[in-house]
Length: 420
Image (cartoon, rainbow, N blue to C red):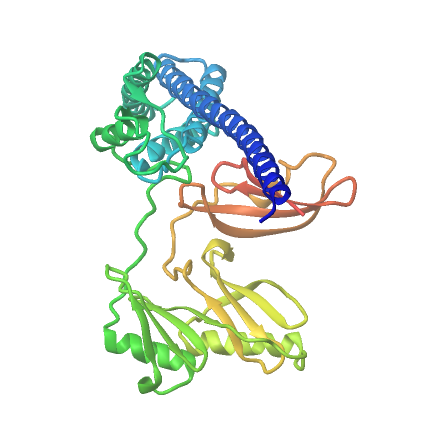
């Protein structure tokens, strides 16, 4: 090896080391910037969570003293927004929050309940609602106090904020307790108020009517729906519980059966060119439903595509379609086979509803700019899952847009509006 080559080798090696050092320095600087940004974001999120839960506690407490309906609705709206802000802030902290289901569930339920009170008539809150608000307020106050304590410990360095950065084991590990551990510990001790019924999405759902199908009867129902012998069925899974749900597969179809009967079917295949009419597809759907025990249903909606016809059939009560208890079924347009069926929401049992308002009075709730095209009776579920008799008013807006207004037949008030 010549002297000149050795000199060049040393020069190039030195240059490579200098370049590598410069790149490492810049990368380390960027990494430190990212760390500072992440630390600031996490600290900011926790500060916002503390502020939101503290404000929620105060809003719920104020509702215990309010007598003016307008002020009460304003405080309810504020409490809903504060609960949502608290839940959002907790969800962006740098650790998994799925284990904090008690705390997250409390914020969701408190905000949803406060929001539901905004829809009450212009009158003072009933005593039962004041009792629920007092329970939620006490729980929120304790939650806020715990968060403020953790906030102080973060500020004095007693505990550390978590990081999403993956650290090497036993290298640079902070020995201090983490915020996630403190929150998880409080989660285990948190005494959430008992659930109660109200008009909101987090209200505990009423138990559906139970059937009494045995395992042998379930297999028979599944085989009938698939059009095969029972021995051709393969059990996919079983869910323990009062519903006794079982899923089978046969002939390229999944069949779900509960203790109440056939609940759903599904296929997964490519559908060829359309060869049958929509009327023929509807006949196939009605025949399948009737064969499998779904009778006294009326078509309430139809649609789909060139290859798939989709229908919804609803039970009828008081000359009203029970839209939220409908069975949805789709038919392949190439051979007329049932592509899917969903009856998980179906309930054949009559429900108690009130028709205090006449149809003409319901139509009077529409604004002048809407033109009424169709009016019919329907029964839907309220936000809390209760049956509610309504008049469905299909209208055309001033610019030709489609507007559907639901009027509560018990109170004569608008309760739901759909566009398009």
